Length: 118
Image 1 (cartoon, rainbow, N blue to C red):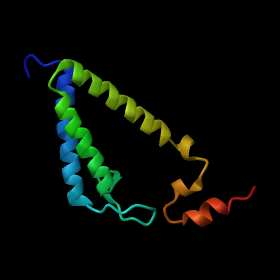
Image 2 (cartoon, rainbow, N blue to C red):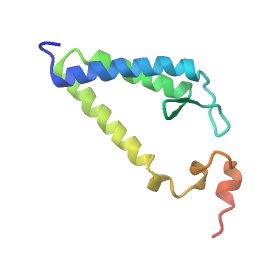
Image 3 (cartoon, rainbow, N blue to C red):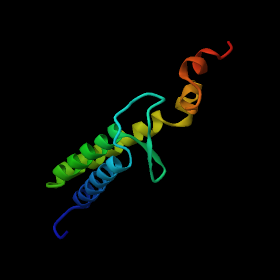
């Protein structure tokens, strides 16, 4: 990797890992079903489905495509980091605390969210 910037090495590495995770994810759970009753596979510790795998594949392909130049690789690295900081904030327990539907898959959403007392 001589002549490559750290951002280019990062974009190449992360892109390759994301493509690999996306492909392996389809072996674990290829279903594109949505909703609380949809089947989900588990890859390492994470719930996945076909849509999640597509996001991994697309993110990886973008990373690999942008690794060619230092400027594009830097843009990918900053953009990828920003998106995942936002996802982490939105998925944090304090962001989902207002609705018990997100904390329990076993309870149907209609009874979970509407049965709270005022």
